Image 1: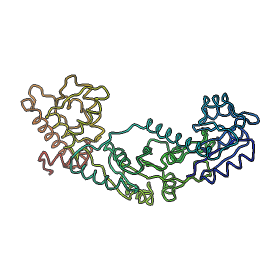
Image 2: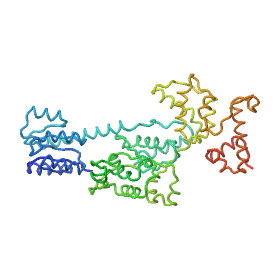
Image 3: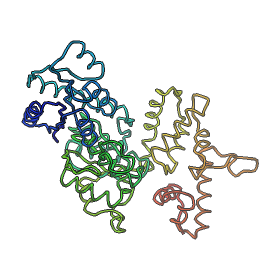
Image 4: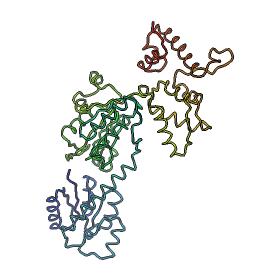
Length: 454
């Protein structure tokens, strides 16, 4: 996509000459004969850099420079046929990137333009990096499912193939996307992420494609969208299954043509973007129900990657806990240890919230447990109702009073599940729904406890 340069100069010959040279260099030139006209152009069209004459009819260049720096984030190169050291210093102090005297050296002008555009790109990248909260840099775990996940990532990352990342809430789908991007050839720029479920439907198109000034009520200036920001990089569309059919059609067109128009605009913008998408929904069922476009699904589903539930890799929990403790240590939380019994309790939990639930629990334990050792009792207390299968506190006459904690918990789970199954006439699906557990996890729990379904 050619970068746009606005030339503001009252001399038509200079405007035309500069415009011709910039076009030959691969830029898209725009021209204006006054500061007022130039400001209107900036309001209407996305611009990457301004060449601004100081001596202009009406508003002069220095006054225009101050307005441009207040309203727009772009480099400005000042040009003047009557330059003085004092004027150059004043322009620089007002935010000018460079000062060039007339008659113009075109080689010097092109060099200054390229340097200004490069500085602007670096500033945008740094801003995006500051705004993004980077997730953990590695996928933690040595379980078979995680080893297989790493192998899939390593194979697909160096390519430009679209990837559809599948998994339930809290499994780490964005971490997978970040890892793919980090191992790709596009990692020189930050990955741009957008949560399709968190943006109102009426704003999703503006968020993705940007808009021009006046496109709708409240659009007071032209704004770049996520596709613009992700040019030459990676765009991560999280919760793609929650995107409206109208927006899906536009995303499909962009993927097919690698170009788009901003909301309210008519200018076609070319891009080079790799798409990673994620969802916790079954998109094939969504297609059957008319909620998702089949053509977009097949465009995204070049390489599907499924992120496993935490309950399917419980052997990774000690490594995950150690990783979280290390992260929280930098937040000023204490460095605590978990007893083997505490880890056993963690590994028997159903984890409906997956890795995110575990991370939150570890942070809560580090804050709430006063000692340096986290016991099974601490874990049970802080898991609370989210576990669904916590043994009662032993009291006088309790059937569990004289049992060790591990045996008491197992006995309670056995009694509890047998009673629930009996209430539901042996219906596993209904029982799972009643106790707030995934059906597949309940089957595993019944098998582990040797409970036979009648």
